[in-house]
Image (cartoon, rainbow, N blue to C red):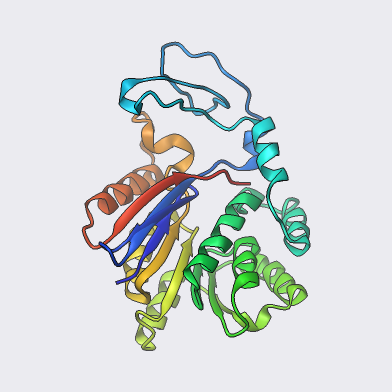
Length: 272
């Protein structure tokens, strides 16, 4: 089976010793920069609008728990190697509707590094938007590499295509315009099961379980699947929040915990 990585924005999953899933969480940079420190009513109490906090508790093995403040995140970004072409795409996307969906430079750098560590040749992205993460991946793929990019929004795909061409990686990217589930099923029917090394999912949250099951068929044993938004801006830990998307992500996370086909890791990664 395939490996996977999932996070809010990411998480990783590995099938026993053969497959891995990872999860990550992140907040849009525009939201983070509006956050300010908040007062806590009780020890170890956090609110979704809190920017910085700390807690010491025996259940955390006396480890300090902190959030990323704007100054700290600025420092992180100053230590990201962001190619110029990615910077241009990020800045153009910032003025577009839905720009909060774009991954952050530090997140994209992690995705690219995972692809390099894995030695991936064939990758899948479910949810492309304007192509920041897919471009980061395509840039580090070998010339013979292939990234299947699944996206249903034609307008955002036009931006992505433009930057694939500018970066000289269009030959590595196979765009699938339409519903991602249909595109993944078509790959399976085309005999491409177990032929991909890496997948990144950042799309409709209520479809995560279906995407995951399809990707497990497509990703080889030892591969990685990364899934974004599994912490859903902290909502999954707030029992007062019970909207359909939050419930679906909670259920997805629970299913992964109980899924003995994969090994899993959940990590918080900042997002922009």
